[in-house]
Image (tube, rainbow, N blue to C red; front, side, top):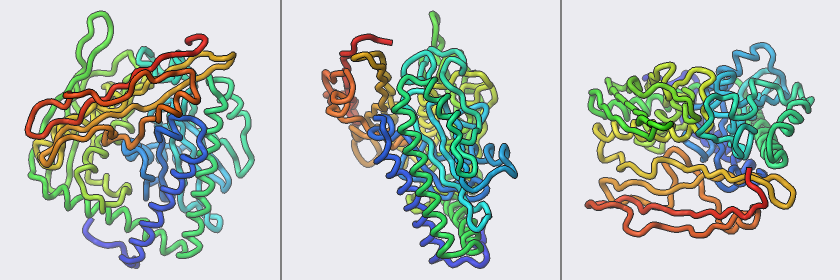
Length: 462
């Protein structure tokens, strides 16, 4: 893409791009300030985006990069399912990886269309990791699940509201199937409120600049992101760069699970081929392909400059191949509640390949992604579920030591403060800190490991 969209002003394009970023961030801040659960409010395991009428991401809030590539697949599937049946005041809800292009069942999307003078012009979208959606373990992130039916409540594309009229039956079904309905419904209300503000602000943008101008500007934002991405890729030496990695297997005689990435750079395009990665497993770590694509996009995006818009356009020169039936593109009903394990390892495997091409832009491997402790049971006659994302460190880089107490690049999330855990849950944090001398030797050591010990103080376990 070498040409600028006709009838667009580069100054106005930059103004609109920043306005969209601000709206996506405002949606994210409203979720943060109004959510009820620690996993959303404190860990910040959620994402927000503004999409154009065709579902293409124009801007994403400063939340979880591994969600970056997921919105478009979900929006394409939603638009196809409800073609001709989208009205002002609709609110859509869904979570299922196989029925609605979701990521895993705890990640529930709330999406609103944006109408301007009777025409669909954009979408305000959120996805949040909910404390619990049912299933065989509190928190709904069981590695031991063998299929998705064991993992919780599956939501195909549904209208939570139709032309402004709430479908209370959906909320009643949700409340009846989760362990802590007050947390889940509270977080859903946070998403609903945030997307309402998103709709209002996007409509204000259209009122200021008009439909024709913004349609052309939206197209130019995508094209501008594509041009910049292509210019970065073109600077990488052509060739195929391969890397493989492993995680532990399952069962009495576990076999290690293999991850393969062949990253091919050809001119200003890049292809990530994950062929050779292990087949899907009867465990909850299979990663649906939208999440796999998001992992690849996030890895490649991290070696690009921050000036590139986080719009769909930057993904156009990036092609991801994942064999159907593999752990990075499972067939239904493969379990995927703990798919983060696989997504992080996919991203790290792509980093391993990229390090051969651009070694000064990629640090050594770090903590392998977030851990998700989930502790549930009963206390004082009521059920409770505690879930958080526990982060750690980065590896050393060409320019310095690795960092500690930071998130993985794929998840811009946070550790929940000890005081908040102990005040809200029957849990005591026995210790929390850095592990001395754990960074490894070398000119630039890795970040120190972290330790967090939990003691259960509830009346009864699950």
